[in-house]
Image 1 (cartoon, rainbow, N blue to C red):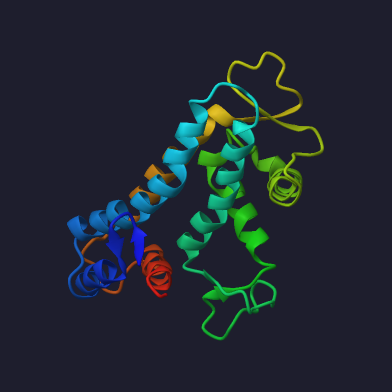
Image 2: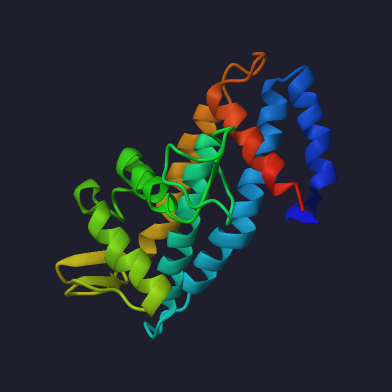
Length: 212
């Protein structure tokens, strides 16, 4: 089972064993680039960039924003080391006993928290508009294939973007800005045992992804 390009669960377990015994800067950079970045690049960034090269303005922007929306919860839960379990329906803060699984409802909280907290996303979603964006863009696109309440998806060339524009041509840059920030926060204290909280969360997420 490939989990990040050609890397599979065996590749991850080999790297994790090294991180658990003697972590260093090189190993943490490998974990970030060969697993986290590669998975996001292949499954999200490259498709968004390819769609962005299409200038027909006949729907490609909707696909770009939908991909953006489906990625945010993953980024947020990677930072916290939380893993989705379809069988859990308890609210956030009342998850299973180990505290690292969540169900269908609490995903909204992780989505909104990351967009509010991390300024990298503010060019796409201003911090005061996160709740509105979640309801009328994220949920609108995923449930009804539309945006609502004045939100419009626009290209940089749009002359009249409307009151709540979502600049599709900024999505790749915004995501890369976030990933650079996350990388800088992840790869610190490389020789520390135990790991930093962010590093421990990373390991929990990737252990989950490496489990069939």
